[in-house]
Image 1 (tube, rainbow, N blue to C red):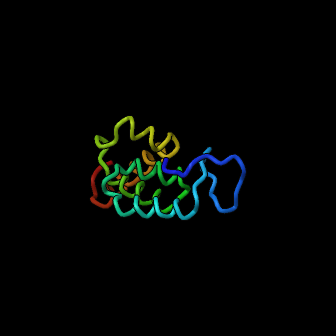
Image 2 (tube, rainbow, N blue to C red):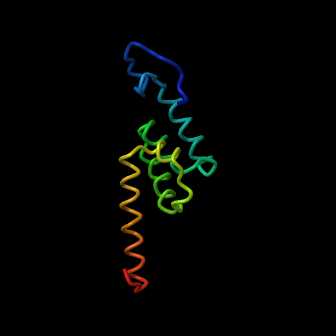
Length: 109
């Protein structure tokens, strides 16, 4: 991801992110840039970035858009971005929403 570089010693001015550490200012700047251009990214990429940067807002933006994305719009690479746990949660949620819509529309299940 977008980070300043590798630091071997923990530093209170840097957030840990895998093997890279970013200054909190850089991290906040990157996240704000991603939010401004969120529609240039597939929702699964936002979910992945939300997980990587431990940012609930990015994750929520991506997951909300994923719920509205048709199944044909989610390719193998998108499932890899999200990870298995998030994808399974998405499957269950979409199934529940579909069932709810049928109940509200008085359609047979």
